Image (cartoon, rainbow, N blue to C red; front, side, top):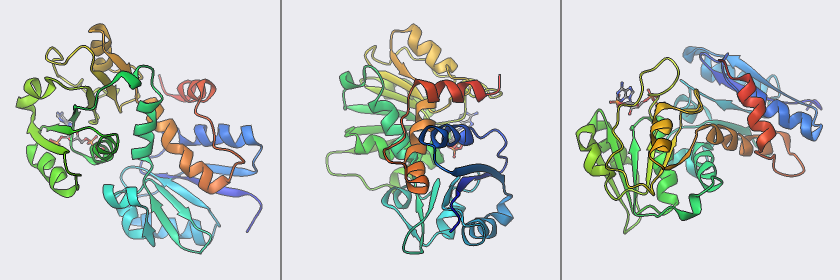
Length: 286
Ligand code: ATR
C-alpha cells in the first residue's frame, strides 16, 4: 500500500460537497500524508467506480452522498448496525480483514450536533416532531429513539411514506412512532420538546418550510438539517419566538469524524471546533 492515504466523496453532482474542506483541514492539522477528493459518479457507474477506487487505486474508503446512499448498501460486503437500520450507507471503509464495510454516520452526526448544542441538557424527552420521511428522516428518527424520546411524531406531505418509515423501524417498549399528515402539524406540536426539519425545504433555491410554530411550547428545541443557508427561515422564526435553536452545519461536521478516524488513523479523534466551522462556512457559496 502506498504511503499516501486516500479517500474521498462520491456523488452526482459533487462539486458543491464541503467534505474535502473538512477532511483537508484535519489532514493538515495532524500532518497526515493523505488526500481526500471529490469524484463525480453517475448512478450507472457507481458500483464499478467504488470497487475500482478501493481495489485498483488503493483507497481506504469513501463518503457516499446523493444519489448513491441506498445503492452503496448493495456494493459493500457487510453493514454496520446503523447502516443496517437506516438502509443507507454514507461511509465506506476498506477493513484490515480485506472486507468492505458500509457504515452510516448521519445518525451519529445528528445526535452529536444536538448533544453538543447549548441548552440541550434542558430538553425533555417526551415527544419530538420530525418533518419529512425521506432518507435523512430515517437517520434522524433512529437518533431520536436512541436519545430516549418516548414518542416521535413523523409529519409528511405524503403520509404513506411516514407510515412506511414507522413500519420499517423497530421500536423499544414504551416508545412510539406516530406517522401523520401535515394537516396534523398543529396538534402534533403540542407538548413537543423538539422540532426537526429533515426536508430540503428552506435550502437556498427551495421554498421555505411553511409551518406555523404557534402551538410549539416555548421551551422546545428547534433544529434543521439544512445548513445552506445556515440560518433557515424556520430557525429565524423559532429564534424570534424564544426557542433554543441549532443549525444543521454541526451534523455535517460531526458525521465526518468516524470516517476520518477509520481512513486516516489520527492519534486522537479530529476536533469539531470553531476553526473547522469557519473554514467550511468560508467555502460555502454565497
Ligand atoms: P431526502 O430526505 O431523502 O434527502 P428530499 O427530497 O430532500 O430527500 O426530501 C424528502 C422529504 O422532503 C420528503 O419527506 C418529502 O415529502 P414527500 O414524501 O411527500 O415527497 C419532503 N418534501 C420535499 N419537498 C416538499 C414540499 N414542497 N412540501 C412538503 N414536503 C416536501
